[in-house]
Image 1 (cartoon, helix red, strand yellow):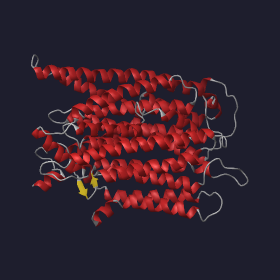
Image 2 (cartoon, rainbow, N blue to C red):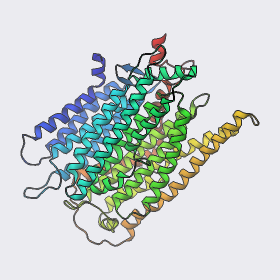
Image 3 (cartoon, rainbow, N blue to C red):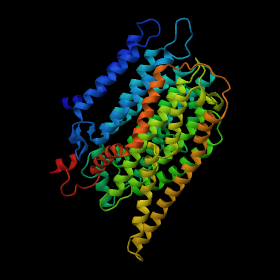
Image 4 (cartoon, one colour):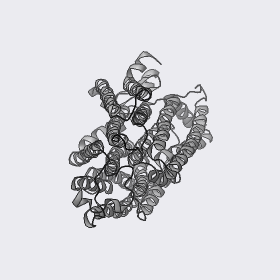
Length: 546
């Protein structure tokens, strides 16, 4: 690690220092105060300014730089910006829930501990974004998991809250152990032939590529891939590692549920992208496993959501289903074509849809947090009945988020689903243009039919999902209000939901902006795993070889 590594990680260092001071400083102050929220927002702003200084226009072209364990490419910068924006939203959303008027008991934990934990999660996500080796990747993932345990414990007291944090704690530890075991296999496989064992993803990629070309790739690579996929599937809440999500979402606060729906999913997806493209020769197995998981995840998530009457359990199963959608784009990214355009389009669609989903899901949970009545969270559909007349502004925001999650035009979710579902169709139509009668063309057409199945099942699932999203909207506008207490979630939660709502509307009106950065991130990511064509910049490994 060099001084350049420290400089490139300056935004993460700022966030970690602010988080540490928030933890420590809160121990020496008495009573609840919003000062820690403003302090955290200021720290995020400073980190954002430093990130803006680093991300010059050349960052989003075909440029990749390596600073020790950090891989600085467009994917890193896009996800870091997303992490800071996510932190801003959730710090705002918790502002009214941790600060109570004098003399009232607080159902939440101390504000400094909640804010500090959110900042730690932000820093962890930023580290995952730029991880160029296994140790840093694992460190970033754990920096997300450990503060999440704290947030779940502080979120809601009582038997249900304790059950939620216990389930998540033990299952998260198990998933980390499985993933780390897969990392150990990957580390061992990197030491073959002229290569020494390394935790660097670029060196692992070079070692496995050489073994694959020589036909000596060990069967243990399959074991490593399956173990890593299993560990990261927990982060994504993908089948069969999804079962914790409904109970945990129901047993914690709305803001914590929103954070769980967004942060681990983004981190798991980015980690999966980094790992998959560091394992050449494993595309066939990865494609088969991930596509099967995608089909099961989106189908089970949507079908189970249909039966829910608890709003947070419904959104938990919605989160499971969206993991399946995201994996469709990743399957397309694993498909290799001559110019790589299909792979770039699939990965770009996944990254764009991740952002779209994060905005709608985070905004929905922020709106539910605003509607809380003291220590009583929004639980059932009855709690939001009739708010279309009594709270028209919040109802409009929730309706926009539900429409976006359902993929109804012209909101951002529609463009996200369109990008995801057209990717498999592109692969299918490309397979039909192969030379008929040859063995390779027949295999290509069979694979194309599988991609067509992915697209059809995805569209059918989107139609199923619309039923329960529209049920939420119908409850708000067409059922009479059971009671009309004043929302006590705080102005911060309303501001957070409003910001997400504006972003969802803007994403629907100008989808090209988000797709532009998503394509840039996917292009620089895939540039590191395929030879540079004429006119393209070489990858760091290729430049070093020259």
